[in-house]
Image (cartoon, rainbow, N blue to C red; front, side):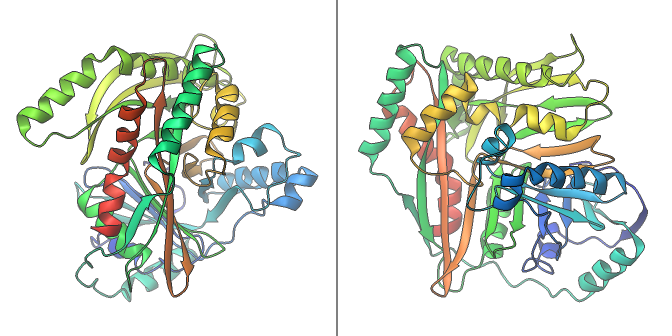
Length: 431
């Protein structure tokens, strides 16, 4: 979550990132990148005007100009941050494609807050005038009431048979040699309980199931996107590009002994290691498109990392960015993330589109920030992600949960994995 410091820096008294978020949560463009209890968080306060990227821009090719404007803003000392929805992949690959709604939501920020929870340190950074406005809003923030108990609903949209049918169809594609693996997801939907808000939901998630790449973003149309992601997509710092794909999952055990056994099972699983290695190879290929020849390496392979509800198998891929390239080039080369598409990527995406039958939206996109002339950036993979929309006096909630399908997959086990991955979200919504 480290962002380049340019302009003014002012230390402030400690305030919890979610408490600070409450002062700006209703403003368009407000974005909190939550690193959890052990990692830095960044709060980009709204209101912020989005760069115009939509149907007209896609038809004219003007979205390229908007991306260029983001690069220019980053060169002036601002930080650019926001969301690339999964369907932005079509815009990035085929710029004449015309989405009905913008798949890219980028904002420029002239002031932001950095939180270091281990040092209990907060700094306000950016341009002086914008910093004063943020500090004034923070000074008026009220104490948060006790967290509300969840009382909503969140259930799969598909009957189980539909998921199993799609899983079998994908296995047929794998046996036919069309793909090696892909990441099938199923939709979930529900509502927050009466009087509950997106901020209440985010408070519960960050308290009960903290993740290193969580996020809260309010879009211009009033929707709120919340992510509890454990996965980094790509990071760029000091000229080094880094990806940390996740492939391989086990639930947490009910006892320490059972938990340790599940860690060993995941670490030794040939199926999960094969899944992970295929995506590592895909990410190596993606990074090599914009990195110096021979510089792409895998310094960490098959590391088990543990989170509140699951264990994951994680690898790290790095490369030295080639001369004349920047973070936006890296995003375009690697998007959408290989861990949530499959291999080969484009064919896997076609098969997923046919089986899932609806846009993914924010789910499996990427959210993060760009700074320092687009020479530094950090983006997550938008798994464990929800989109909330005001409806009938409350908040409707939608999301997806998925997992890798390979030749060795058992559809029943894959279904259970999608439910395990959604469990923290369901607990925070419905209890």
